[in-house]
Length: 459
Image (cartoon, rainbow, N blue to C red; front, top):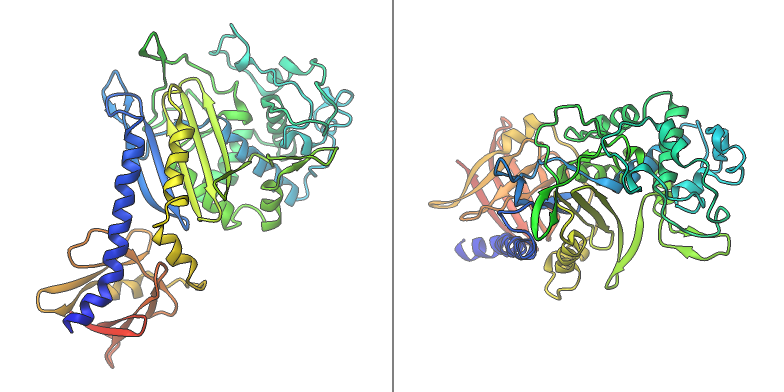
């Protein structure tokens, strides 16, 4: 029994040790750039849609000496563009618009100059509309509140820089027009549409659309560096950033966003694919930008990402589909290279030859799990004696996820239901069956790894 016990638990201990080593490796990458005494960073790493790392470094407010937390709220800047683009596609699925519609159909100011510009051109920055907005102009009073129509009036008389579809040139102005189209088509303010159709639907409880009068719990303060010292960044009224960059969020909420995209909660798979497909110019040349998503590579691994920046804040969210890895990093100082930090974290999973998690997972056939009522799962919780004074713990977290905790370990191993009493582990070839007596009471569990079994009685 002792040899079997050692063998059957080997995969748990190996996996747990491996995960913990990544915790320290990520800590080392982030802490080499961000100090505990300075404005900082919140970092989340998820694999297979589950967070495997979530930490915050540094200060949320230097004056109050308050630390950043994993639920700290940041301005995410142009990552907002993903939400705007997906909203347009949601309205298209509802039959309320088409990305091939000319924008003059919705915005009268562009009936003439925009007669050849489609919504598609706005989404992928190929419209030719000059990137002139109040935020980008020197000397503009950033405290000013402006309506969407006032924002459009600021740049509507600018001539096009090129014919639509001829070139790619990043344009915040184009995304401001998209926000106004969302309002016209939906009949509600942009912020209300985003909050009701995205935030509320997928549980992004700590996210909002730039209402700077609102009291926002855990809101961070932004900083910049002047003369080698940290100073508070200028206040910006986020109405100026609007649908191009006004969203505030957390790393935890952005994981919910990413998971909603992957699970087609908001859109059909075909629409998501449309958003995440590189653009073709009129010439047939491919541009590595879709609808709110940039494309690149890290080694041989594809990367789908977007960055963001406002006064005192920088952000990045990137997804590596090959590794099923999502990384988001939010900072409250635009004085350091957050993109490089995220890249270094991603490289831990992409380039190292001892990436055992990925190797094991990729060798396993895809297995589908089912939902089991919490009252049944609760019956499985408790301790199970493998041998005297050596117990396994089965627990249930607040998301209704059953897990196993091995002796002497702190890392929980998630269990996924194949039937109501038969569970499997995704990272290796291992299964657990819960056994009941004739009265239906759980009396033991049987663990099976690669054909080797042990039974542990419930205490």
